[in-house]
Length: 455
Image 1 (cartoon, helix red, strand yellow):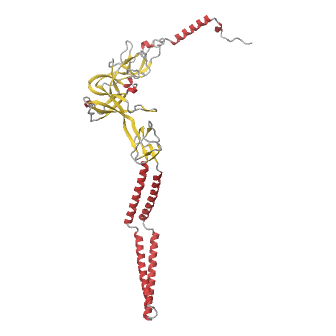
Image 2 (cartoon, rainbow, N blue to C red):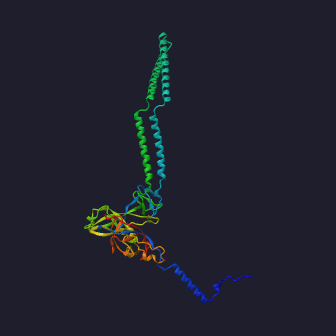
Image 3 (cartoon, rainbow, N blue to C red):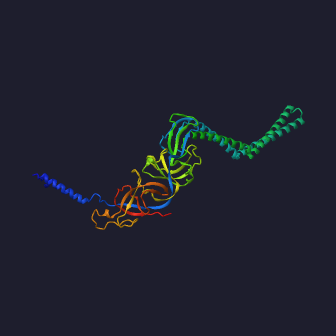
């Protein structure tokens, strides 16, 4: 027999169910506590300092690459590879385009073989005559000498026979014997000279000629390899391809542009400074940079160039500020051509409130900082004591410091610090870590207070 497993309270009247629902909601609300009773946010604070700084003046400028080059082809040829498109990153030595090199490669191979032949001939001369060749020349000399002795002896016998019996040897036979002896004597002289030359080896002049021929052929090979190298157009520095001027299959002539590469791992913000202010700009000064397109970021750089040539119409001088760029998976954060503003310290001396750049919260319209408001009775600059142990939920926020947003304007940069213009006083605590998710009036737990020396 099946039993009814429906909970008993579901079998009650609708009015009873409504009452039960209200009771459950009230119980949950009591368990959760009041909406604002959330634990204090753990933060790190900085004690504001006051220092004398030079008043800043804002100048507009443009983000420019540190280096920019239009890379062309040194030789004419047909493009067979063009691996990088506009917007892609390249490193120094990366190929931008490859031209066809089949014909010149064959010429280089033939020239290398000719060079190997001439090098072998030079080595043969430098190594000198082999001992076996010297022995061969010695044997030839001795053989010629033996024949010369035989012919001399024959000629003497014929002269003796002719003297003893005039009719025995004719005049022609005697002259022929004499000529054979002379010829044999000359052969001995030639064989002797060849033997001496074999012992001396090649002349210095012959070695020098062979060395010159090798050097000439090496130059030919080097020229051909240089031509092959020039058929590969490479990037001369790290950067990004910002323009392309050819494509696979196109013909380029010597001097034609192939691609344009810009180096923007570091960028220069170039601003135009009026002539009244340019004497106060010094190399190496820290400068705060604002990029309106990146309103949630603060950049800083150093003055690297003050160009000593003014625009004659505007009477302004170009000043370049070097800024380290940030490279992400999507590419560089700072891009060439971006509008920029630079706060150059060119005014009078003044007292300023300074804080780390991390204290400034951007991206919500006006820049602001979170000031730590201490509870009544707590000493400024010191973390307030936490709630008493065993305190009921909801009591902690009334005893803990709170974070109050204060709108500020940004002034000049001084190292890692930045000038804050607003209703702030030295010694106040501002949040430098944990301010990204704070809400106005939220209670905070100051885990550490960072201080700066009054230099």
